[in-house]
Image (cartoon, rainbow over all chains, first blue to last red; front, top):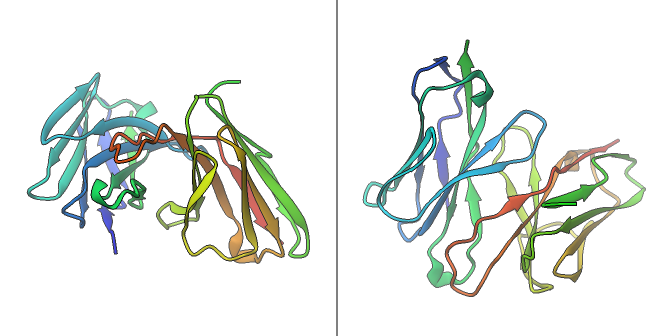
Length: 114
Length: 116
């Protein structure tokens, strides 16, 4: 059973602070990792993808991957009230299976307080 | 139209009704997906189509019937649903090649389904 675990939150941070969202996964063969943002009543929006160990930065967002620890995180710098949303972690299992399907966590709800 | 579109956006149906959800992608992708999103639960993959061929049926009850006439269109036919089937149904698409790990999926706006 593939599992992707996230703290459901809610996570509250003041405006301008760094928000740190964490995700662990159970399949050691997982190759690809994604962060989606989902506003209330809307569909998930892809904001970051990461495939190699280390950090990947895109604007105010930084994704961090540690395959040895089976851990992926998302940092949001200079948090804005518009960042308030649920953040979904998604993982593709090992490509050897050929399935390449995404497994999602339940999401972490982030609230940025003005 | 751009991206992934879904119609209708909201649907209320009785348990004896037959309805269909429609998804269209304008991204030139070859794979399309149906997901179910219920409150407090992870997104559940329902069906996967790759080059119009169904490659995954994730133990979905037969009251849900998918149809993929081409790589740009995907339907979900609904028949004799139950109240517990009320959820947000999301369509997604990706450019999916064999053994390709860069399977970035892009979602449509979803259909909010209520079964009475």
